[in-house]
Length: 133
Image 1 (cartoon, one colour):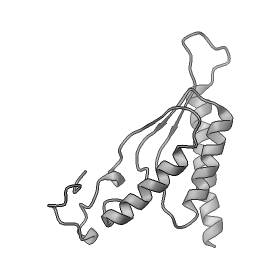
Image 2: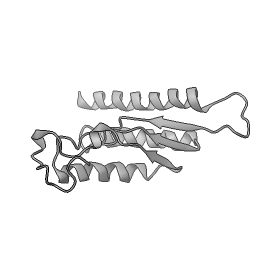
Image 3: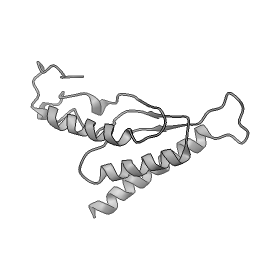
């Protein structure tokens, strides 16, 4: 059951990429000023639930479409708000590993899930050097 749910999430991400690309990136007649880009958001990468497989599928589609650049609009990882530093770093490492396979420039924007340790359940003290960053 989890696997089919995850494929649906992956399919939705790819659908969002297609819709975004077709709506914003394609024109019938290109001019010298035109360019193509993909905007993706809410990747929410984590090692569980095959999230990495879904993101890899999206990266393959991005490379196939060959836009000029990608904007990733935040919530790159599942959560740094409510997690330990080690868990947050693991998620960022996974995002970095997979996103580096995108063959064109990618510009990342910070989302609320990138803010470290501010939820009480994280157990992170507000004196931690990365707290709230």
